[in-house]
Length: 367
Image: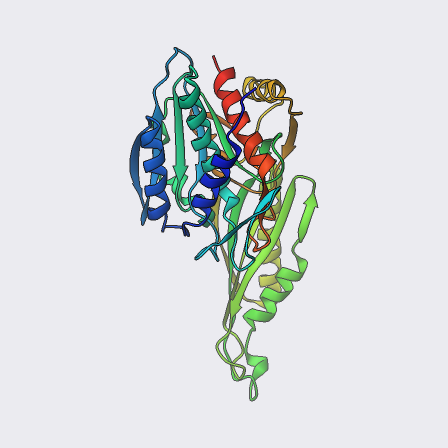
């Protein structure tokens, strides 16, 4: 079932990978994608977002079925300039000086090859929307700047998870950011240190008392940035840190945030310092049952091509989180990329082929 043109999908992927596309600078790769989809009958529209554009591709259906959404992102993490792909009998990687960009160009190659196959074999299908976003790697900025209300799809399939084809991400976390700002009292560190209140010392004690790392199988916290002070001969008047809290369970995330606030309040009172916290929600989480219609549909599509579905939770966010805040119900699917965000990134060719088969099977399964 679905005899994929292995050499063509390899060529498509390597051509995509070798086009530099850091966040907000997706212009060149977008031109390539538009050219390929236009030849396949796709209607491409660019939607301004920040310094770049999101790209929406519409394929009219040849049969009356529900519209579905495929999604991925066009940007990659750095270093991504002058990517030189190395193709072996089994996998594709970079020469080790850059990332490969399989995150998420594997998805784009899969979508292109799926419609190459459909056109070549005159396969009937329902309407398909393909949303390719910019600046995903900077905190889902592309999808956050896209008007999801214009989508017609009932279900969305985001190909943006690492690992072998067959993994279905049905749970992803809520994610909040917190900035703790401490104001102490400046004083000369050599002549009158006792007259000062060290904001750095206060912040250090707060950080030491905070929960750290993995709290349970659903919840994590991490302090990632610390700054403060002006000189070694001044008792630091100001210091701050930035942290994140994630949890599949929103109540657990809020409970951890409360712990942070309580520790800041208690420690500042102890040293007579002032503390403030700025908090923002980066994105909401989602949790979809394996028995949900979209899960069953995906599992059915996988079984048709002899894949064993594996339902998993993921600790990171993706465009899937934002899409699920709209009328479209979405899941995240593995698309074969491995060792992502590193110069050791690679993708197995068999996963590029299997991912294309999965996209075709989903299109065929939706009625």
